Image 1 (tube, helix red, strand yellow):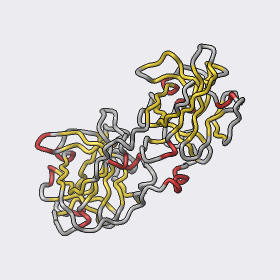
Image 2 (tube, rainbow, N blue to C red; image 1 turned 90 degrees about the vertical axis):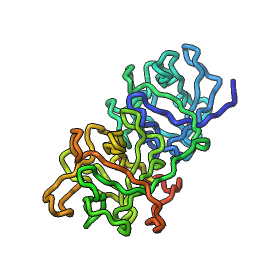
Image 3 (cartoon, rainbow, N blue to C red; image 1 turned 120 degrees about the vertical axis):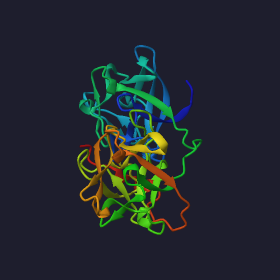
Length: 327
């Protein structure tokens, strides 16, 4: 037996932007965040093998030192401290067969019991179960934690303009995202395009996700209620990876791009004109993509010397704020 113990993210095939995480002594799904030690698992090999000859292992959370276990019956997974060497409720094996390196993680005592998303539904905070079946949400991939070796893209300071209304930039007025005449001295028109916030999260087309944080207010653009509604602004907390703050972009002509919801790329930034003559009435909404100039945007990187509004830095000791009850 090898004494090797490697740290991994455990990614689900049904939703590759999600992995296993420990929150409040529960095993849940979380958006992949390489900064979060609560998503990192130490895979410790043991001398035990299952009936197919596959080697068994235990999964220990890097942040809490808790080990994944279960009650030896169908139901939610648990976490336990200081497991006993003869306790097979903490032992798991990988199936020999799989799909694109995604395999079933089975309990060593019953190979038809797999780790799975509850009701095959995956979202942040969703409880993870042990259950029968061979659903795609029961296949997993161990991805080694190479975050120390990764190059993290630095946030960019930008202005955001629309092809439909040249000479105007996105800004914040009275808590609403609107278009206003371009003003290089207006810090409300300056945005931080932060790719590192969601370093491993991509959309269905493989485009990298990012957050857009207003320089003056420190608030990020949020999906809101979705297509047909105004976008919203939300407090930006770097300690919590919030999927409702994630956007991706697709290239259009002349350097313009669509800015789309990461979770639903059919919805994009769209200008809504209540009154063409009043810039305060050019509001930012979400609409289904329609290839119009109202949905063509340009990021213009700028050199900004104004101080950024302080934001929370990553602090693992505060990671209990992640837990949302598993609803």
